[in-house]
Image (tube, rainbow, N blue to C red):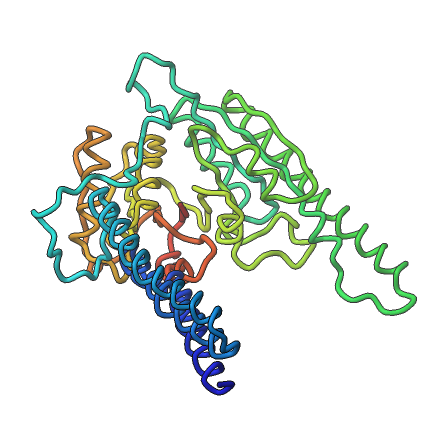
Length: 388
């Protein structure tokens, strides 16, 4: 009895573990539903039988038989109804699906399509749209002046305003590593020195920013903060506009260890859409939007169309790696129809990826599945990269 109980418990728990991994890793709703029902029937049923072998009495076996029978009756029906509701509601199929046997048999709706009404667009209604605002994180790196120049160009093009964020990540600067016995005094002096060094460098960046913007007459303000950059940026995300950061340097202004990838780090903390300036450019003429076939990319595209930071640039849409171009077209066209715009050029992945701005529609977010969508180096080799 002990061996039988152990066997059923281990096999049932293993099935539940595999099903849990399937719920996390499988690419669409219907496959994840299949994994969940397998855990509910096979996994839980075997665990219950293992419990019955561990405690072999009549009342336990009666309860186990009733429990397994209840799972067999309810779980497949519930899974079928949920899958049917998802299909009728328009939940997208995995882009690698070879065929849809229910096409024409059941009417499909439009699930989780982006609504562009939450982002006011100029001339769309009688309501005065929110003023375009460029939020620029001031940087002490050599690229800092280029970021300010980009912000000024955007504000001029949209008759907008600029909000400069002068931020110092004091938590990072205060972290000096392990302190040996008797070294607290020197560690404290090092912390103070690093923070003061960052303050002096940031003050110089603020002066250069004010000098550059004052000459243009663009309205601006400056927000100062010492603490968590993600928390501070999150509280100042513009309703309509763009957030610009330095693609290579963190808010320690060279006085600390920094962050390897500031763009992905901030997006994982909930700051998106976010634009990172990584090189200087004279003008923005070509924009490439990488669409991964998900509703999140749809929402990022809707945000970009409503914000329209570079209206004169040519826009191209291409499928991200591993995504069918035809599936991306099915996602993209309804968004442009909602915006009443002519659809852009749909590119294949064989064409060279050369653009002044590259927009990743669904990139940088935490999780196992999204980790496979991390941009490669050639997809980041652009003066401006936006993560949505």
